[in-house]
Amino acid sequence: MARVVVDVRLKSEILDPQGRAVQGSLVRLGLGKVSNVRQGKQFVIDLDGDVNDETLKKLHELAGNLLSNPVIEDYELRVEKA
Amino acid sequence: MARVVVDVRLKSEILDPQGRAVQGSLVRLGLGKVSNVRQGKQFVIDLDGDVNDETLKKLHELAGNLLSNPVIEDYELRVEKA
Image (cartoon, rainbow over all chains, first blue to last red; front, side, top):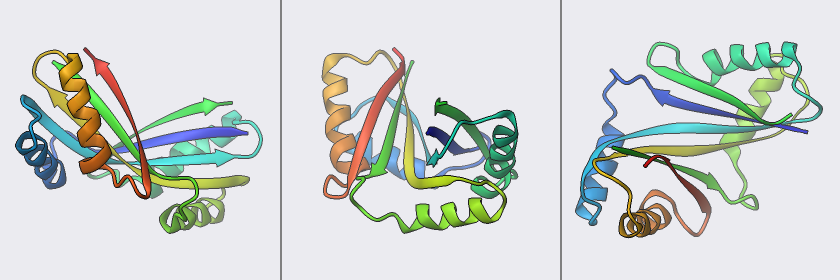
């Protein structure tokens, strides 16, 4: 079994109002010196069997188009157990 | 500057309909053998200065109560640059 984790984050030039709101709350609740907060999504995908090159290619294709919106988001994909 | 990443995921015993929907889409779009998908949130927090013990304690307190709902979610916190 393999576990693939895909982190999806807004591109840095895109305004992140949710992150901004969280930043305000963190500061109000006593965490000083927060310079920036970004909120993203994370997908944890469990696969039967190993991750071969073909599967990895398909995963990148799906991560870049289904799991993230390439216009405003970047994704990071890592295989945790191969 | 320090970067702290907080991953928030539904507890494993909690049903995740969003993850289930993503799982269905991944399979339909050609990724075979997906046994499970969970969708979570990720917070990337940039802090000025170092993360000392006091800051870390505060971060855990806020991650466990503000960023996640302890009834249905677990969180994982890691410091990426200290």
